[in-house]
Length: 84
Image 1 (tube, one colour):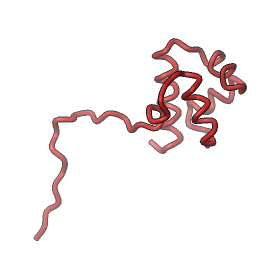
Image 2 (tube, one colour):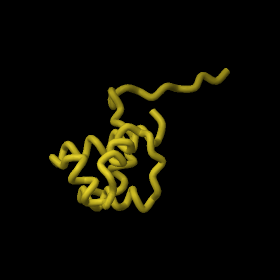
Image 3 (cartoon, one colour):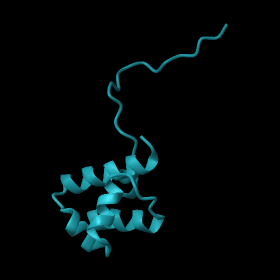
């Protein structure tokens, strides 16, 4: 998953978690609903200003929108390098 896709997935996840429609989010950021859809599908390379607008519109921290997905098994030991 590239950065645009990760960002888009995080926007979608947070928007749905907060029960905000794409139309409502687009209104809050002054954009078209199709634009929000393209962001969520990872098709848009958004500006930092847009990242800030989305975070403010959802009432969340910017870091939440840029976060890496949670590791599947956080208890798993990290791979070790074998040195010879």
